[in-house]
Image (tube, rainbow, N blue to C red; front, side, top):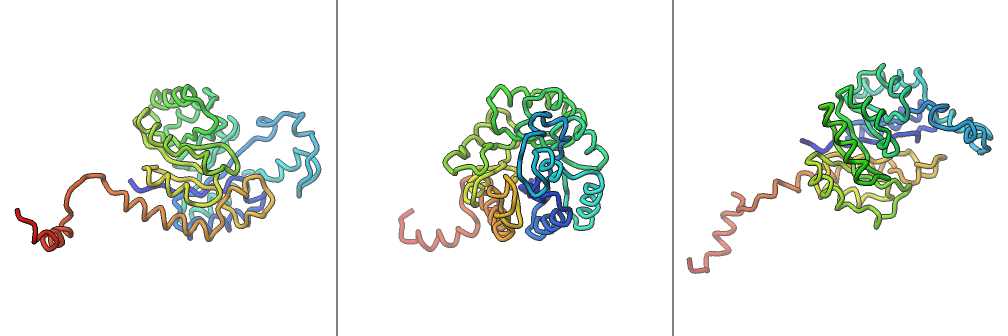
Length: 278
């Protein structure tokens, strides 16, 4: 199965549907398989105290104004759905509450995504698993028992899933990546394991694919200097094109691991070993 590459738009659209469409264009033109967004019901995800707290942003002076400014509603998601169909690229979203999960059911999406923050909410996991859609499950901020329980829930529901090794630091320092966890997760759970990265640069993602990651998710942006907490850990268009091209080559180069002489090697071996007594 070919590596599944998701361009995580998240909230890097800054509440602008035209910017979201430009990011969709970037993902499609660079060869990604899907784009991903984040859906929240503001009053369910955040407390009133936090929402009333001061925060300077392009949308106002409170946390509520900032978070509402970043959140897309039905009109925007209808347009995202239409535009992704027009461009021929999948989209899906990580829901952060039950109401948002219900909202996403209005669309014929092939995938769900469990954000790292959500993996400890068992009722939410059960609700997602009950839909039977292939689900990417990020493992940032997790202990082994959290992952054990999530895997158990999805197996009990007979819902296809894929773990995604993740370190929930934005941006993440390369030495914190712990890419060997991809192998650990694959051996412990016997399932596909991808990589969701928040590092600056591309090398760590290349390493994840070389270790056998079956999917790759990176945040994308038009410009890392734009407003937003995720922008600094995101990949700009030129970098995304390099990333997709390189990981496709790494995927091909990884091979099947079997040892043996290739047909193309046989005449070379015959020539270079001609002087050796048999």
